[in-house]
Length: 130
Image 1: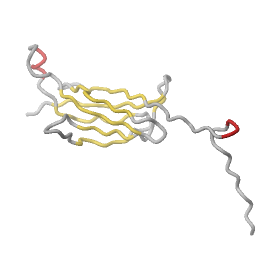
Image 2 (image 1 turned 135 degrees about the vertical axis):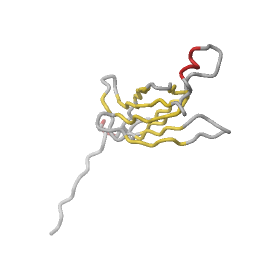
Image 3 (image 1 turned 90 degrees about the vertical axis):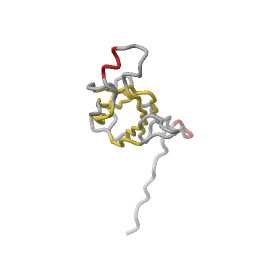
Image 4 (image 1 turned 60 degrees about the horizontal axis):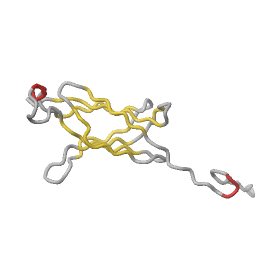
């Protein structure tokens, strides 16, 4: 029987760790024959959390003998949301019987500056001729 672990992703912004709702969390497996397998696409909830995603992991016994195969499975993660830079994580370690929590801090995209120092130009709504 295949061993499994799980991955939970927590997405936030700023040092205050404000959660980001609706971020796309895309998980891929390790590179095999030059390709990655898409494993999961989720959106974060109002707490900025996606998961827990159950994933294959090697037997814990591998961690007892140094020099053998790796005692964890490696996965890749892409997290994106409009208005933020995309975050890419490679080599996320998932151990058998353990829930890994990966924190992802997204950085806001810069706001464009317009003449007069305004961030966004005002929208002028013209009166309707009824």
